[in-house]
Amino acid sequence: MAEHDHKLIHAFGALAELGQEITNKNNFQETIRTSLHLISGALGIMRGAVARFSRFGHELNMLAIRGLGDDFPLSLSLTLEDERQFLSCGLTPIDIQQAKVLPFFQVYDASFERRGLELFVPLVVRDEIVGAIFLGEKATGEAYTNYEKEIVCAMGQHIGVAIAQRNLMAEIERHANENRQLFDEMRSTYHDTVKAFAAAIDCKDKYTEGHSVRVGKFSEIIAMELGWGKDEVEGAAVAGYLHDVGKLTVERKIINAPYRINAKESKELNGHPGVGYEILQPIHHPYTDVPLAAKYHHERLDGRGYPDGLYDREIPYIAKIVTLADSFDAMTTDRPYKARRPAKEVVEDLQRNAGKQFAPELVTAFLGGMLKELQGQDKTKRFRRLLGRDYMEAEGIVDTLKYTLNEMAPTTPMTYVAAAGQVIL
Ligand SMILES: [Fe+2]
Ligand SMILES: [Fe+2]
Image: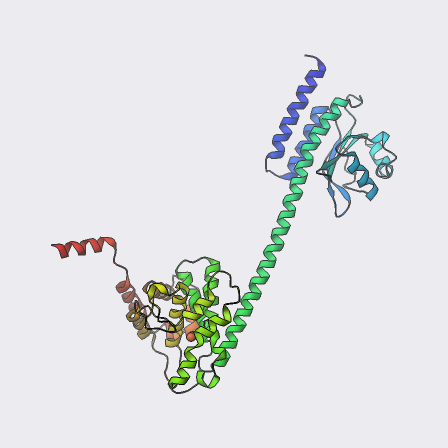
């Protein structure tokens, strides 16, 4: 085989290997180092470097250096004229000896000459400089042939694409990070605004201080116990925080009346779900339908609620969650005409009204969460923080919860079959 053919096969072997190296997603720096190694090996070159162009610093930063000594500059700055010239050359090897008219080669002349650098290849991808290859003299001392220059170009194209891809990835990552930050900021602003609203609603009602905030937190607990995702849980909390927003338009003396209000006052107060819906409707709420929760949080499964007397399946799920949270808070806090009821009694009440006022599976989820906390399986102390330690640790509450949950456990299909069988027999 002729020497020339042998070299050709060797060079193309290196090119194929380079293609493979560049497409594998390993360490970028390592890929570039291997690329330089492959070019050097294919053409018998002792010295060289591969650099990446920084369009912000207008400089070539070395990614891989071979045989150029520790004092070879790691960064070479370019003038706008250099950049323009390299761009117009495209991906063509420049003979350093013959290119001294360009400012870049004049400035670094001594440095390049001392290290015997012969070829400079600007890496241009889609009309942008992405880097450069520096190659020293060949081990044989002969000049580069045109065919070898072509090989360098082909390899340079591969390396250029690898650098461009890397730049693109970095850009995408930067945008994604910016978006994430922006989203987090917006999310926390939204959350703060909602909390401020809840506090404003609660301010109006001196007897039920903190009611909206607690309903938000109880709704959050129910959603968590249902296994909802993070965003949906947050949505449930927001629905709870804002469920009584309509009370902002109800006269303060009606809300704070230390007696049972009359029919007219009652009508005004009972308008708050509808008013709340009107207030919340124009705002876009991510994750859940907050306006519907406000509108229907006084509906009951048995159709005896207000404002529309909806039945079970007609009531939006989020509203059922808020209804349970709302009633639970009403039962567990002191009201002007009613003291808070003992925990045991409240649990029994929830069971009694499951299927009438509350969705049974929500009651089960909520009480299940409470039992988990009391039995130490849940360490977050969510209930203790909201209701007080003494209240939550009242005697017999764990047994009541266990008994209630057992009673409320849905009948399994097996039991149902057995029961049906008995009837038939
Ligand atoms: Fe309400
Ligand atoms: Fe409420």
